[in-house]
Image 1 (tube, rainbow, N blue to C red):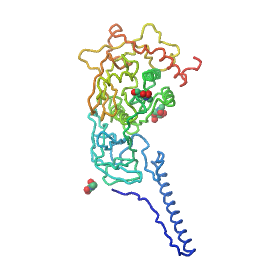
Image 2: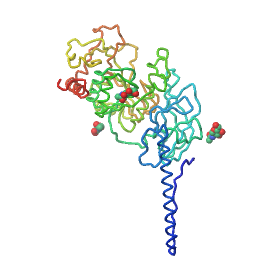
Image 3: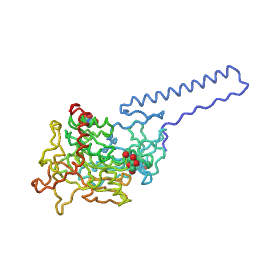
Image 4: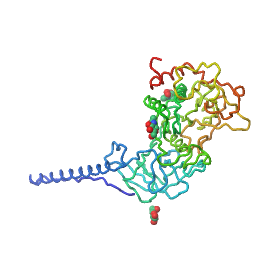
Amino acid sequence: MLRVKSDATAGIVATKGQMEKGKVLLSLLIVLSIIGILVLVYMIGDAYYIQAPTAIKAPLSNNKFKILEASYPITPIRDSEHFMVSAFIDHRLNGFIRVISIINRNCLQPLYCVYCNAEKVCKTVHTKVQIHSDHFGFPYGASDVICTGKPMTDATHVLITVKNDSADLKMEYLPIKNKAVQETFKFNFTVCISNLFGDYNNVLQFAQTMEMYKLLGVQHVVIYNTSSGPDLEKLLKHYEMEGILEIVPWPIDQFLNPSSGWNIKLHKGDIQYYGQLVTLNECIYRHMYQSKYVLLNDIDEIIMPYKHATLQSLMEDLQSAHPSIGVFLIENHIFPKTQFEESGKFKRAEWNNIPGVNIMEHIYREPSRKNIYNPTKMIVNPRKVQQTSVHSPLKHFRGSVLVPFNVCRIVHVRVPLQGSLTKEQLVVDKRVWDFEQELIHNIDHTLKLSGFLKASV
Ligand SMILES: *[C@@H]1O[C@H](CO)[C@@H](O)[C@H](O)[C@H]1NC(C)=O
Ligand SMILES: *[C@@H]1O[C@H](CO)[C@@H](O)[C@H](O)[C@H]1NC(C)=O
Ligand SMILES: *[C@@H]1O[C@H](CO)[C@@H](O)[C@H](O)[C@H]1NC(C)=O
């Protein structure tokens, strides 16, 4: 154990009954001076930490000392090519600390964890680095750095370092999350949207997707934001203010050259798709004790129950048929945005000037093809997942099931995949229309509140 800063305890000056008045006063003065000096030392100590250039986050409130907290969700590991993202206790696996990280696979080296408690007592331990198997050949990959050995039970902060003896309190630490197991959750359904980047400005489809999800019973949506278009920015701010949307800053482009795809041959870069695998895993751990279920899908996808009115009743049925299962795979189905519904009844004048795709006009679905697998997205119980990829988990407890297509599937309005198919060769699928009345009312309400429609419309 390395004791970095010890608690100062002032001795008690005992005076015996027969002491002279002068001596009593003198002792009092000495005691007061000692207290004064101690207070000064504390203040200078505080001033030092406040002035440190990287101290950005607010200090721990119930703590006289301050440990520097990382100010971004992506923190370079000093003297290395790697990055740490966030730290969680894994209660399912002996309570060790898992630091979700981005590791350069070409520069592997021993790494160490330093964890500290609120008294700044710190301990350095060895790590096991687990690079997720889905890195698609990019040099940087989503990884777990596992701090080995029994952690201090009261550890509050951790960092990863390349030195085995460095409890350096001037370095940036990650707060340790998921401290306690919870049995009840703030949310039943959370949607994790892994990445928002470029100048994506698809306002109408995003508003429609959010309002659809609200009707299905989603209470919380999380987006990892690298950048977005100007109009979508305005809508995001609205949903953030409303309280349903949490925006996690994800400035990956400030640290790496992110690829805009998963195929390194087509889209060069340091890391697959803006670090999508890192954010998906982060999102699962972030909501482990906050949300009963987590939906992992892209910004233009809706995981849609076809036999149930809500996700709640869908999951009650699925879970009672498969009590121990924590991973439900949902097939993706494409609704080409190039094929429009004939009557034009949802081509509403109110939405004419809203940028983006109107999903209610696109009710033609591409048919499944023989021997071609429809990729899946997931509804998971985050407490049963250890590592995830995009279409299925990499490591999980108790197995997974593929949910039948007629029970639940993804409505994915986008450019066609089977582009040569005519309207007659596509399948009519009007599931979104079942919600039309409430959906349109709620979309318009949101567009008014966020300033896209005049309040009088
Ligand atoms: C720390 O590293 C040094 C060399 O870098 C090595 O000599 C020493 O044994 C290591 N100590 C521990 C506890 O691993
Ligand atoms: C979550 O679902 C339970 C029923 O399983 C319900 O009692 C509770 O109110 C729901 N929580 C929220 C936040 O909607
Ligand atoms: C998303 O990130 C960009 C780049 O940092 C930032 O300019 C923008 O304000 C962020 N959007 C929201 C809604 O937080």
